[in-house]
Image (cartoon, rainbow, N blue to C red; front, side, top):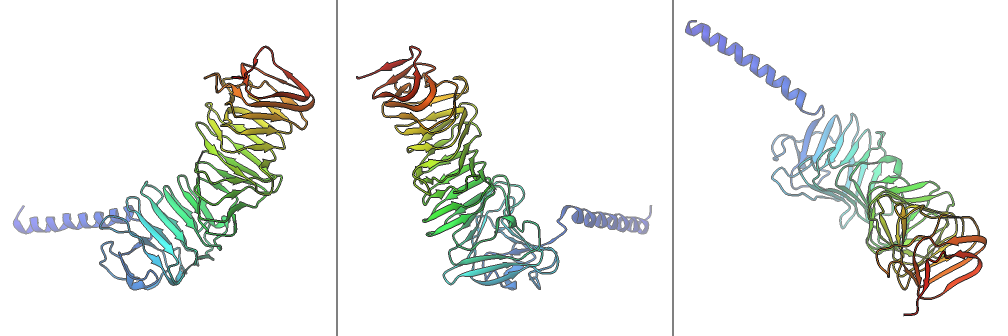
Length: 415
């Protein structure tokens, strides 16, 4: 091969390489062109956005079209811009606003000292976090901020893994506009008033601020993961068909305010300590379902009365020096391998009202203290409570009506 032919062959090969490289880049990159917010500048100004993640490149001509606008600090570390003024985002095409990336942390706050409004319109979608990755991201709607969603996209607000949506405003999107993905958090952070929160399935929920966060629906509000009760209160719905279903864990000492609705605690493993306070009812709920597998322990932080049916099939209830009252049909664990009560010298159980009692009362066998009660009261006509294993009573054993079948398991203690 002579020199001229070799040069032609080299040019041909390089042309093929360039063509293949272009095809490869098309295949591996998103269909939507990416535009980046780079460190500073008003969010609602086109000049604050660049096609290069390092602040280079051109600015977009509009906040619309088939583009993804990404808030991300490519130099490393987090970035936390605040939206003041009005930002109309979306229009023709499908336009995404993404907070953070798979590996990049970011936060967006709507509403500064002078307020702020994000109008999500057209077919726009707001992504809090990326579809993969565990780096924390956050969207905060401050007390004087507004996220106004008129977008026709399906669930235009999407919260992803380890991303937090914090809502401190009294006006916020409706639940059918929101998609809460695995590992996401919603923080209800209003400082005052009674706020009707979304009736839906949450992955994790944080209750903070002041006032009352209220479930006001007729269906089920479920939390699959953490319920962090930092401050304020979470009020149960007052509808008899409504259910508060806690399938994960609970932390914090802020109370759940009781109402004439139903509480279900399921899932597995240690649950945590749950505190109650007067809501629409005085420390009482309608129906209680406990189905915590693996002998997961639920610790009472306060007294509680169950006026409806109790179905305690699996788990451990630590009375924790409180009084638990049952006023209707009561199903207890079938065996110690299913569940039992942890007592103490200051804990009490009261059985009143009417209804069948299924299975025996079983106490923890760990220590003499955990198998103890201060008082056991039976006041249910024509029904029998059977004590299924050793129980020590340090106060009063009372059978006003009905029968307590001790079976040589009860010891009355004075010291």
